[in-house]
Image (cartoon, rainbow, N blue to C red; front, side):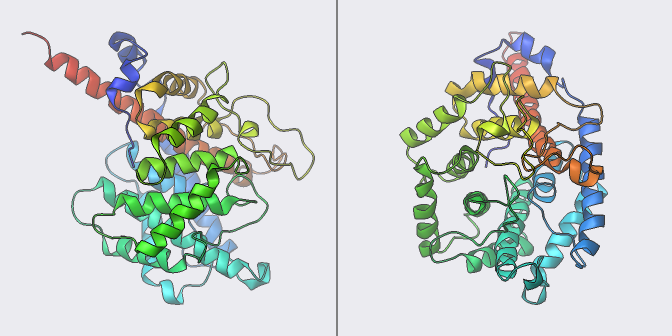
Length: 367
């Protein structure tokens, strides 16, 4: 998985001088504070809410936080260390760990909980260890083993479904299977996926090339393809990326409403403006493709994110499921949590590319 965009991509669309002038055109301190506070709140609320000793790694808050926080600064803050400790404890106690949601929430919920958690645990630990020098941690190896053990015969994993888009609704198991590829390929040298499991997963994910798979899940397929060269051909990647580019708006942003036809539970109208999550996730995936032809679209997405950070550090995204404007912040901001985490990944990568370009330019001058 690439978490930085090479300088050539950005500099193919803007000059070095203008790029440097735009550097750090966002408040990383406020973004870090927002993410840390939201992660702390999620851990505090999710443990008693689900009657668990350790917090669950949610798709909207926990997972995005844990894969993004280290991109802001070198040392992890206490909330991230505490959250990773919770994940490791769940992994090492996997056999006896109480599931996130028991059968009282639905007969299928225990199986869905195990499948979802196995993928998310493997993802956050593999990507964490990928950043650090040295061998893969024992907990990450265990998490990957648990993940493959939970895989179904058709190649996917059981996935939590609460009718909540975009991560816990119809078709979200495709999102989960894409994350499994990213987790597996991050550490393929140390933990070789079972051949039959990888083959089944490849067949399942390639089914997403059909038009029946929504664009949000096809974006996750592109993310998976960036991690595993053997998943899609170059022409298939180009075709999917072209579908994403068609949805970029004049302001450089993207809209959740264009990524899938998610019906609102309360009949409220979908948000019609570009939003933080759709823009950040779409731009993030394009960055992972590391192709110069997408540089203009990436630069426009970066610009939108730079211009649309809220005062408290977040990137606003309204729930596609219902009007949450009158709810308390805990639930009202869940979609903004994921938006902010992916925005941080995008902008940190853009800043890193600018730094490398500046250093290269300075080093190439005749003294």
